[in-house]
Image (cartoon, rainbow, N blue to C red; front, side, top):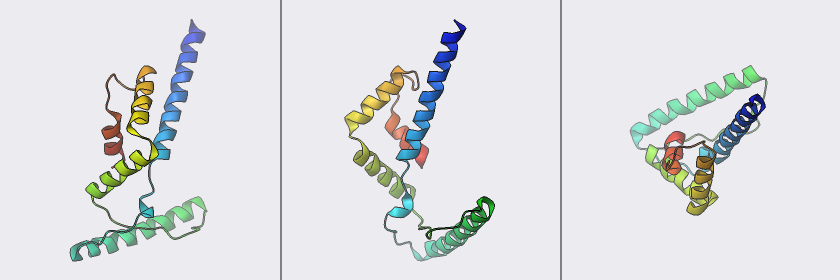
Length: 127
């Protein structure tokens, strides 16, 4: 019995790792889309954001010893813009029937509770 219990735990970990990898693959690159014009007050915040992002990027480059290969694209987006972008990406990646089948498969493996609505959860998680 001990072997079966260990095997089940191993399968659960493998499925969990696959789920995390899927989440990482579904996470879009926000810098790839065109920038949204910000109001005048937002441009000051944007300048602060760009300066902070550049500072963090330089520090990470020093810490990791990796040099920056291309400049980082930086923009500020509203939550509504990000939500709409994520939904578009999810729809482009898989149709609703495929996402439903994936959620039911995860439910069958015990990774999700019964009747769990995964799509809104994933969007909220990524925002």
